[in-house]
Length: 483
Ligand SMILES: [Ca+2]
Image 1 (cartoon, rainbow, N blue to C red):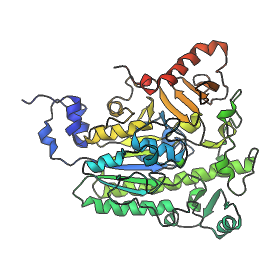
Image 2 (image 1 turned 120 degrees about the vertical axis):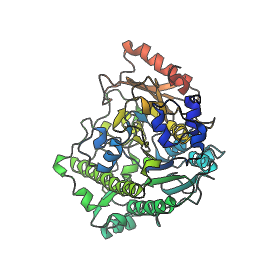
Image 3 (image 1 turned 90 degrees about the vertical axis):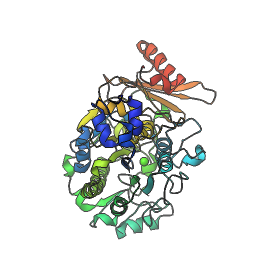
Image 4 (image 1 turned 30 degrees about the horizontal axis):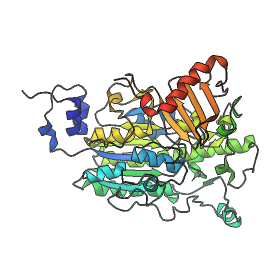
């Protein structure tokens, strides 16, 4: 009788199929599984996706394919990005390293330049024999992440012009302005594959067909561009929604007592035609933008559905882990804000779900998780060592037991603002270059889940602020679960 493996030994050698058994199995020999192919990874990024889909409880969003994935997987409903901006968030997620004041800061972060050393998640998989491919937007920059990919990252022709207008009227506006402004949305009567995301799905399907016959396991990164601005989607996805039924944010105002540093002028949106240079949007425009955002979510959802169907048709579903993430949250008028770029819950809470063959699906895990956890989790699930440089914590134990005690805090930052989330509070402080606090804000999610009243300066919260400031000063290790 062979000795049962420890969990660590088990995970070092197990395949997906045996992981699923492993959650209750008595003994599995390493030898029995060492010859089996490691699981594939389908790694799907969706640019600017809010964690608000039907499967996340937002029933007015039409996302049947992501809902289907969630029904077979696990949703992490309190997952946080480390930086609420595309390039920096992705650089952190893909390297497994957290941002600092001078690392992973802005939208155009290069992971390689901010953190030299080729530490990326896909590179690690490539080193372990995986075929690694990048389609669409995985890194912010197409050539970032040296050594990550088996072939140069692929993007649809013209993706450099990411605004991707199809209507002549939109193109005329975009071409006519010296600043290059175009409309913030478009509903063209075109096929799905006219816009980039349809092309990216086509490419992913073609790659899956090729990878099916490949001897090596694969790590296939597929990065969709919508629902990032401009909200351009085939008209049929706009037509899924009844405009009158679209709810606007119920808190379209700055939180009472919010510090100046917490707010911004949503310059990203204002760079589009038809958006005023300052001041709030008309209700008409706000409703159109929410409608357009939802149309883009439904459009991308349909493209993901095509890929998931093909994965199943090819017989790859049972040996492929599917992980899906947005790169940060997004404000649709909450706090009077649009876009990301802030330290509110709306900007930091981010979508994460994973389907692991053999792991019971349909569960929602409310434990605090972070994007830096994806790197070690995928390593563990695929039997790869977890590189020492990574600063996340594998969430694999949560797959077996989503309610077990877990992290006490999740950490994010945006420029000089450092933010911490516990099960109850979100606290953010801003430090000057000497390390002195000049502004802060505290929201109690038990009494104020919309973050509408900053209670940081109430005398009765002094102890709470001291505790949360201490977490920020001591760093992320203080948030790890007790051993
Ligand atoms: Ca983004």
